[in-house]
Length: 241
Image 1 (cartoon, helix red, strand yellow):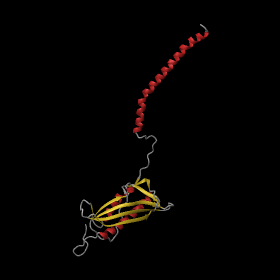
Image 2 (cartoon, rainbow, N blue to C red):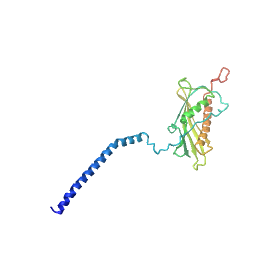
Image 3 (cartoon, rainbow, N blue to C red):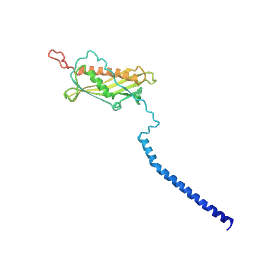
Image 4 (cartoon, one colour):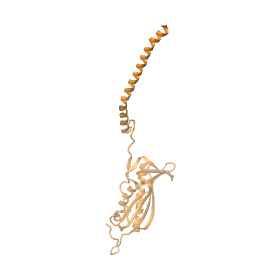
C-alpha cells in the first residue's frame, strides 16, 4: 500500500461522516421549521382579522351640520288648504356630503371632514313642513288622497366658490310640481343664493341655511296663491287648523 492509498483510507471515513452529520443537521432544521409553521400561520391569520391595525392612525370624526332652528316665517301670508308634500333630490344629493365647487365647473367635490346630519332632501323636507305648517295642515298622502300634492325635487344644494377663492355662496334650486287628483296644477323652479361669511365648510353651511329659508318662503307664497283656503259663509277664509 502506497502513501496515496493510506491518505485515502484516512480521509474518506471522516469525509463520509461529515456529510452524514450535515444531512442530519439539515433534516433537524427542516423538522423545526415545519413544527413552527402552524404558529406562523396562526399569527398571520390573527393579524388579518384585526384589520392590520398596526401602524394605522384613525382619521378625525366628521363634523355634522343641519339647517339649524327654523327662521321666522314670512309675515302676512294667507291661509291655504291642506296639502301633502313629497321631497326628493337628484342622485348627486342622495348622500350626506357637504358639496362645493368652483364657479360653474363640472367638478363637484365633498368636504372630507364635514357632513350633513341627513341627506339634503330630508333636511329640506323637514324645513318645508315646518314652514308650510304656519299656513295650514301638511298631511301624509295616506290620510287624504284627495288633498293636493306638492312634489319637490332638490336639484342644487352646494357651496360655490369664486374662481380666485376670495368669496363663496350657498346655492339651492328647488323644482316644484303641484298636483291635484294626479293632474298638474302648476310647476315652477325656485333658486336662491346667500353669501358665505367665511370661505370654508362652516361658512357654506350657514349660507345654505339662509338660502334654503328664502327659497321656502318663495315656495310658501306661491302655494298660498295656488291653494287659497276655502271661504267661509261671510266670504272670510276658513281656518285650516
